[in-house]
Length: 259
Image (cartoon, rainbow, N blue to C red; front, side, top):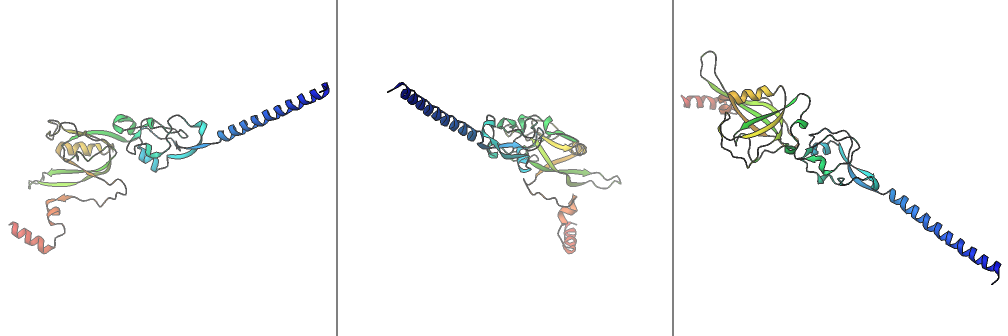
């Protein structure tokens, strides 16, 4: 093999190796480019979410949505399925629009404290009640209830006392429900061991609750989880409860029997 031929062969080999390296490099670049465009579904905040917002409300209102995120931008422990967050939990901290959601951002309401769960003219009030009025074993944090007050009326004209009952406020959120493991059986008025419930109410409702606790009886009525509707205001008295739905003849007969 002459010197020139050998040089030509070496040049061709080097050219082939260079071409192969270019092909490999180009393939790797293309692979990396494709990989950088891979996406994954991640739960993302679409708007700012205040601390104390229930996860269920944030999801149903669209404040939390699954969105496509480039895989390399996915944060550690990002939530990829809304069911991974307990719907009864609340935001443990403020969450800002565009943030990817992790499970640590939501906690049971009894672990977040009361302060983050109220704002504006809403107040948190803790009240003591016995087992039955407070629906022990049924009531849970995040439930909504109507508050029913029962009172004894003392007529100023010297007539006989009589009892009345009515819904004093509707759609009250339960921030903290009683622990079913606590000791029970106390008497109303603060004696003994009672269940303590924390409610979220407008400031104008607070006096109604304290007044009822002081001079009457307070009961809870659990509302439906969704689609709740309210009937007309109604004052329950002995007459309205006993005679409601009866004909005038039946009422007259009842009065006659009573006498």
